[in-house]
Image (cartoon, rainbow, N blue to C red):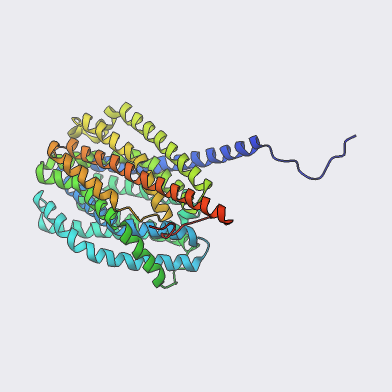
Length: 458
């Protein structure tokens, strides 16, 4: 009779693979379920605004949101790179994470002090040009700054939670916020008080409540809120921000070029048409959320080597598949989407499909940039915005910038150039790593990890 050994036998590779697939399936099912619920609330709230707000008021609302987006890109983008790349190293050290958060807060105030005096007069002029009263213009600008402050606090508080893998908690917080916002918009509609000012006001107060009372309390598990700013972290944030400054300025310019061009050369109705189409971007936000909330933290924490590159290739394949699936869904349901937007936007069928193609293209076109930012590889990012602007400038004389199709074509050109340039920089990092591996293998030392902005020589 064979004697049974107390030692467990080797685990079959099929069992390991099956366990991994089941784990990923459960994670993705929960993630997509929560994300779809979050985006459904956002879509419904946006549709309620588009469908029930006066078209001129909606044009003002779109311009105020674009101001918040402009300043947000300028003040959040460079700092976000530092929060992600350094946060991946400091995770588990409450003191260091607290110093990172405090340093980011201080740095943000300096950036905002420099950017706000430039952006506010420009957007104030655009609002007044589109018929917004002077006092309403001032109030909308202040509310846009309020939304920006809340969103920055959200970014700082969410970073340690997201890097620790608790993205489902952040999704639940976003779902609660979406439900509250949808209820507030519904109440404004029932009382006849819905306009650009009240819609932004509700966003400020509801978002501030969720960020402070829900996300902020959980963030204290990973950060020490009493840690003062660290001068060395501040210097690293400065170096990172200087390296990504061309990309940041380009993103600010690109985020507003469409709305600015159509405001200057088109009519108020064209501004509203483009603003209504941007609401559809919420449909492509679900796959983008998977990349930013799940994939980016994994890339940030990964060891440089086969582990990182396998994850990067898998992420690219996933992004392409999600982009195709999203476009197919929008194409099939285009008539229903236009019906949801309302009778004022039924003529935008071609514009909707063009917007869907560009938005879905950005799902995978932005992945190389996400990899570079997650790892802090920012040495040559300045090349891309120069090429983007050059290609767009060449194309401008051939496009009708008073119409949404012309503006969307500009964004499509940018997506193509961005994917090509940032993808080339990722390939460069892979080649440099392979070269370093060969040199160190010959010398008897194996390079195991690089992570900071000094990963490789510039």
